[in-house]
Every structure is written in C-alpha cells, then in structure tokens.
Length: 213
Image (cartoon, rainbow, N blue to C red; front, side, top):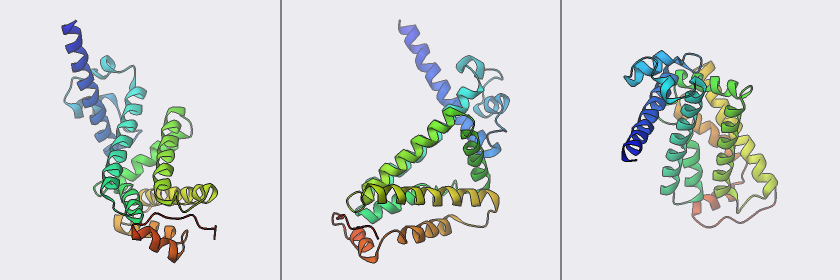
C-alpha cells in the first residue's frame, strides 16, 4: 500500500510538471503548435512519456488551459485581498486580467486559438463559461449593492467584451500596451457609472442601489 501511495504521488507530480511544460509550449507556439515531442522536451522527459500519464494530447491541452485559468484566478484573488475599496476591487479585477508579463502578441495569439477552439470543443467552451461566470461574480462584488440584476448583467457583458476585444487587438495589431489597455477598459467602465457612483465606489462606503441611467 505504501509503495502504491508513493507511486501515485510521483505520478501526480509528473502530471503537474507535464501540464506546466505544456503551458510554456503553448505560450510560445500556440494551441496548434503543441506537440507531444515539444511538451516532453520542455519537461525534460523522454519522448512518449506523455502517453503514460495522460490518455491523449487532448487531456493534456485541457489540463493546461485549466492550469492557466487557475493562475489567472489566483492572481486576481490575491489582488482582491489587498483592495480597500470597491473601486480598488475593480482595479484588481481589470489589472489581473492583463498580467504584466503576459500581455504580449505571442501569448494573445495563443489565447485566441483557445477561444477559436471553444467554438467546436465543448470542454474548452465549458472553461470559457466558467471564466466568464467568475468574472461576473467578481464584478458583482463591486457593483452588487449598486446595480440591479439587469444592470449588472449588462455591465458584465460590456466589461467582458472590452477585455476580450483588447486581447484580440493585441494578437492582430500589437499596437497597444498593458497600461493603455487598462486605461481603455476604465474609460468604458466610467461610461457605465455616474460621477456620484464612481465617488461612492472610491469612498470605501457600501454602495447603494441607484436607478438605471
């Protein structure tokens, strides 16, 4: 039993190492450039070892996307934990969706390939839905006391579209930096709230629901 338990822990470690290696390969080569040979080479393991730990490359790819989403989620959670006002929570959410070392054309192009795959692969589509539900939940922690359900839904769609659109722009044109992208998102957000509402969000006081504008 002890031997079996030890082997299971080692296998779990190897699976994590291979998924992390797949993530690095993905960021460099995109979804279509991820081969078993590249992943094994990046992990420093023998060619063909992937077949021992995973049922197929699709399982590795799915694990890699989940791994990346978890990294993003953990970064946003850490930022939210330091936020002192509702506006600071909003900054944490937006800035966390543009990681400082990751907002590059190569990485943006890689993620566009995942979005495209979500249109034909239900596993990827499910991960996208989870991501957007989490974004809406985070935004509800900012606007929930101020917006009714319809207004919150509309704001969540608009903000998600701004985030997705700027990543797409980065992949296609590479003519915008991280700071400029964040500034543009906040210009969009300011169109969703009044000056009075923004002041309340910045104040640290609990927002109160206001009529739709």
